[in-house]
Amino acid sequence: MEWSLWTRDIEEEIVPLCRELGIGIVPYSPIGRGFFAGKAVVESLPADSFVASHPRFKEENLEKNKNIYIRIDNLAKKHKCTPAQLALAWILQQGDDVIPIPGTSKIKNLDDNIGSLALKLTKEDLKEIADAVPIQEVEGDRTYESMKKVSWKLANTPPKDTKA
Image (cartoon, rainbow, N blue to C red; front, side):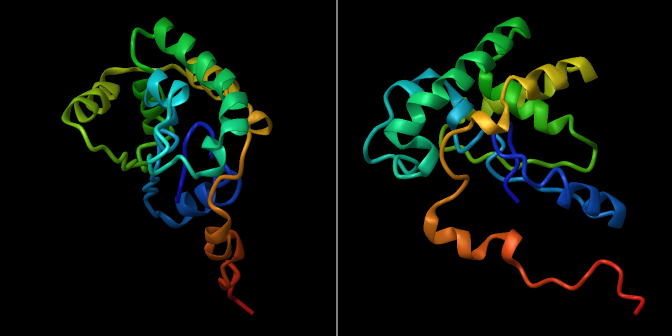
């Protein structure tokens, strides 16, 4: 499941259900598909970039989402880390049952991701970070139009209570 500062739709039902059933949570894209990876992403996204066609990275949406990046960048400075480290630390500290899988193509980014383990955030810090990314302000759909048909939200799953 995708879970990050700007994609939190699994928090209401999926996360509590996984915890009730003792299932670990392995979120992909914990750095927001690279959005929180650094200024270069929000300032000059190459046209041939994998995410350039993603709804949240389309020019009109990216321009609006920059404000979110700026707020996280400011909080990262407060915590003496990078925005990517802050985003990853936030997801890591959602629970011991959360094992995020950030994708990376560069060793320096891997090293940066590892640095997120050193961040110790309080409950107040976690709330402040989450509040800096109001979901209603995130512009653009979470996924590509073609992928919406295979969303967990449309899955045909049995009801949780099968005692009938």
